Length: 283
Image 1 (cartoon, rainbow, N blue to C red):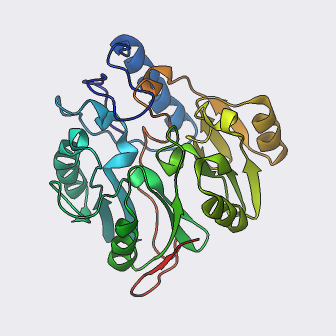
Image 2: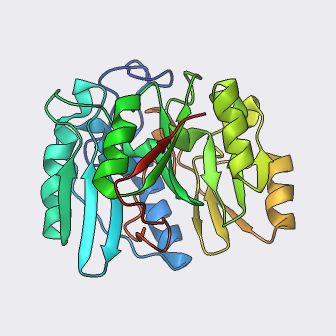
């Protein structure tokens, strides 16, 4: 996670951002600290990276890079290449942080050159790295991810402006279940995602726009910023504990709980099969 020492709205690169509607810094810090404490309380370890003063969106740590560990001794991260120039300086601070914590770092593109990739679009799920593309990540980035990481990449085209990263519309819960909002995707991609998930909890557009899919799972606990009644009922029926954490100040920048966290424990060969040379599948 990234400590919100300089969190504010300096520009508008998604539908939620309004420079005239600033987050309250005191309330934002309180919410961030509560999220950290809640994560630790359910058994997660939290590492903290400092925020650089000129990078107000750096608090959305998920978008800094995609971690994929080949072994305990071979820890890797693919750094994001942000679509918008306003965010690209974040990676110049995050890369040394990852390197200092034992991760070998690589890049798909950097400094405005190469394919765009933002890690908020990527999930290890089933037999693939499931990656949304369109608003932020480019289709060309899927090929680079597949070949660089030796994985199968399943690309899904995002079309909804309010769900510009896949993690606003998709939340894996376990090996067979996930929250899915088909309205975020084109028809072929929505059908492909619903086919991939054996037991989907299908979210309406209205439900997804509460940021409920932008949640994280620790064991059988789902940490959520909001949970519509129907969604809660299904999660509890499946045996999950729902824990709500208020992060409304961070919604003003267009992100929520999953955006504010970046998992460091994704393992190649355990969470994601090895596919030599990589493979890209599109609907």
